[in-house]
Length: 169
Image 1 (tube, rainbow, N blue to C red):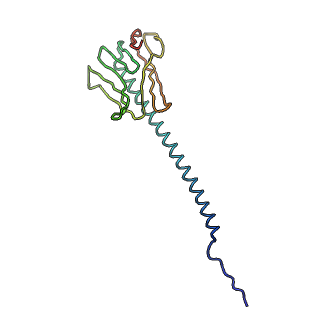
Image 2 (cartoon, rainbow, N blue to C red):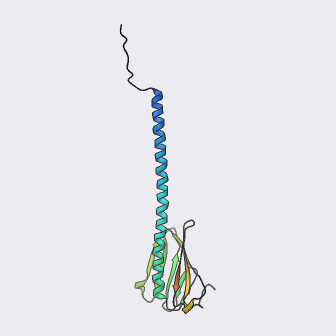
């Protein structure tokens, strides 16, 4: 009599368990990597938005200061004023109802007044960076702060500024 060989038609429970464990490990690695990549992308997007808003604020401040700098500017910790033209630049912090915003008000020509809104900037402050420079110019250090340790600084040159005028002193 001939022996009839039975061919195996399925897989054992142990083989299925090994395959499922390998699939689970591969899925865990893929999910972990993608969640880390999304978190990294979110942090980079927030940093990029902060730097973009800082650049916009710096450009606006430079333009506004250049327009009103006639030698009578007075600067405070949170504002720069021109008493001659009744113009001022100031920062308003965010509240529950409004985002943070930078105001440039021109009472002599209201059509030139502007307001910039920000999502990531929390504070803008001004302080004298150095003593008077040659030619009567003054440097004002402008510091823009965001969430956490984010901070950006730049210098504003008050070319015509009266160096003896300082409202903070």
